[in-house]
Each structure stands twice: as structure tokens, then as C-alpha cells.
Length: 352
Image (cartoon, rainbow, N blue to C red; front, side):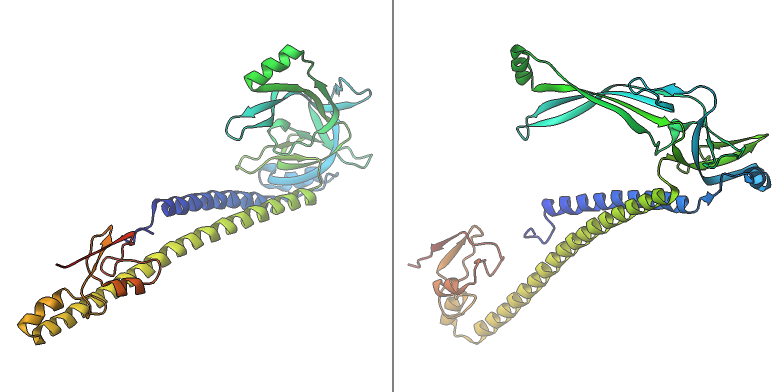
């Protein structure tokens, strides 16, 4: 706290930073809580023979936010894995990821970094069908790549280490980048895999479609069951809530600390003003009662004991207000009794 009673720049920065972080965390918490609330309010519909009748009775033959669980079935052709035999799916994602060590000039350490250098996703039309056999009902899944939680399974993964000569190693060391290799990955949504879809369910003529919601709600295609998906979202909400409370408490504690410092400083200033006023009244009374030859000595008396002469110059403020005995009696850290500024040096004063 500065001498004027105002918060310091560091305290302003600390309070502002904690307030901004708390506001951001609270915003994220509200978003996560809204998503979890919408997910909890989604209508669970069984993928069975009565699905068309349920949708035909719904307003506009549409359920705005529905949960449906089933197995993946391709409509026509399927995608074959490039690396695994007899592995068929409806979504295939091939990824090449480069791994390298990068020199950080700030921490002076080598950090492991990765970057996707190529990625291709292939999709063919597919349906969700009941897990039980013998039911002639299917839900066509539209725009699967727009979903948040696309349940792809890694079917192939291999790391290709980089081969370097001695001159390459020296050159990479000087440049600050050391290649480690390339990670090759293939992910697929297999035919027959269990899938949970959360989105808008629409009956169009004789077909049923699952598509992204039009009301800004989240679209899910997850390999988890609905209860696990909901539990994961609620766990995320609790985490963001705890972070928000922690930073909010830190912000309140910082604000309380600053306000308390201001209050203590203001109370100290009022106390000193009262002491100074009482001292001036007492000095005026002594001067009025004293003889003319004693008034000059009273004006030069120590402001604390009023008996000894002033014999100290306080630096850096420059006040001459105390005798040597009263200066020694000042509590640590020693401050000027007039302006409360810290005393860095004391110069003896000699009257000739």
C-alpha cells in the first residue's frame, strides 16, 4: 500500500487478473452447465417398431432434442481399413502427426512438440439400427462430422522414427529443432459398433433422420452409452464450478485485503490527525501560560515529550520534531511522527 492510501500497481494488476480469470471461468462454467442441462432434458427414444408412430404424433413430426442408441450399419458400400484385414467401417480418419523436440529460449529446455501434417476423413452414408435382430427400422445419420464426440476407434498406430546422419543432428541442434519421427494413425467407426446419437430426430415421408439440432444445442455421436456421456458432462461441470469458486474466493480475498489495508491506513491517518490537533492545543495552552522568555524554548521542544529540545533531523522527510531519546523509543520500523514517512537516516542537530 502506498503512502497516500491508494492500492499499488501490483495490487491493481493482481485484482484485475483474478477478476478476469474468474469471469472467464464463470462463463465457461455457465456454458458447460447449460450443455449438461440440455443433455439431461433430451428425450430418450427406444429404437424400435413404434418409432415412426412416436414421431408422427410429435409436433411437426420432429423431436428437437432426442437420444437414440443403436448399432452402425452401412447403407451401401463400406470403407476398408488400409492396414487391418477384414476391418470395415463407415467413417475412416487417416492422420500423419510429426513429433519433434524444440528448444525453448525462455526456459532453456527441449520441449516435445507435435503437429498434424496431414489428415483425411472418409465418410459413407450409414444408419443406426436396433441391436436386436428382426426389427425393420433404421435411422439415417446426417452430417456425422459435425458432432462433438465422434466415437472413432483406433485400429492402427505406428511410429516411424526419423533417420538422421551426424551432420543432420548437428544442423538440427543449431537450428533448435530435432525431428523425432512421424506417427501414423488410422481411426474408424466400425460396422456394428454401438453408437449413441443425440440430436434432432425427424420423420421425413418414410425415412427417419438424425441431424444436428437447429436450436444451438450440441450434436453427439458417442461410443459411450447415454448415462456415461451425461455423467462425463456433469463431471466437467463440477470441475469448472470448483475452479470458478477457487478463483472467485481468491478475488474476494484480494479485494478484502486491499480494502482492509485502506481502512487501516485511513484510521491511522485520522489517529495521527487527532494526535496532532491535541498536541497543537496542548502547545497553545502551554504557550499562553508560559512567561515570554519560556515561549521560545517551548516552540523548540520535542513534539513527543515536550520537555527536551529537538535534536534530530529525520531523512528523507526533513522534519525536525524529536529529541534523541524519543527517537530511540520509536517502534520499529521507525517512522516520522509528523508525516509517517519511513526514517532512513538521522542527523544530529546542534544548537549554538
